[in-house]
Image 1 (cartoon, one colour):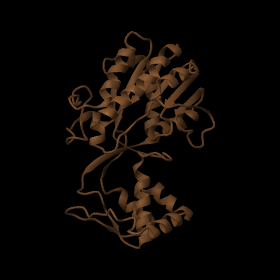
Image 2 (cartoon, rainbow, N blue to C red; image 1 turned 135 degrees about the vertical axis):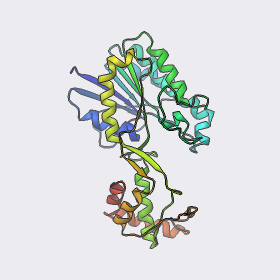
Image 3 (cartoon, rainbow, N blue to C red; image 1 turned 120 degrees about the vertical axis):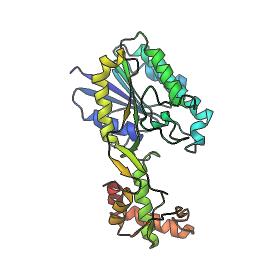
Image 4 (tube, rainbow, N blue to C red; image 1 turned 30 degrees about the vertical axis):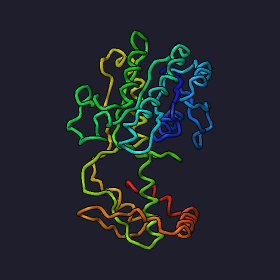
Length: 313
């Protein structure tokens, strides 16, 4: 295998950080992390860059001539799962970020072999309607719903036409993993919720509503899929008319599954409301004094981190 240089955009996020760890440990691989802040515990090359700044991206591209693979995992989100993803500002910003990076990079990196672009099941409209099962690439997309996925995908297809590099679009479902300071990491929130409720001395109400079946993929496993796509797909995908894959190699589980694990670690009793979910908006306490005391105690405790780590065990 020839030596490669992997540029990871969004290297501090849930997917980007997992990809960073994977490629940093891979043989014959140089890694360049690209993000606004340096990823934790990473001693390799880091490029501090705001992808909304076109001029800064132009300057950075001049130093990235060795790049052979791009993993684009950067994301700009507005508040609100539904309203935010419908917001034209979110759509335009994400579209502009990808263009700002790739437009100067493509001519600057003559040895580019592959680009991986991350999407998700919102391509099938899961944020505005029930998921149509089975959801299939090329036939189940909800293109009538405004989404920056389509602008990014159309741009990438046009940029790749006639070029000697390939691309892959991956659509993972719910992702769980490590992302220090990242807002997309669900499981630590459950662990902190359990720890705070223990400090309050109450039972642990299940806040998730009615039972349903879902899927999740581990971020580290997704990183391996990204690495595979970059090599196995570099030739085949450039000849494909639809190099898109829904990526869900994780377990199928009920929505309540993580909660018993958190309860066992926190030594609490789980309460499930079979009708309407109980409102728990004051779970962190009604007084500032209680909140400060609880957070201080959690920051000093050794058992709070195992709760976070085992919440999906």
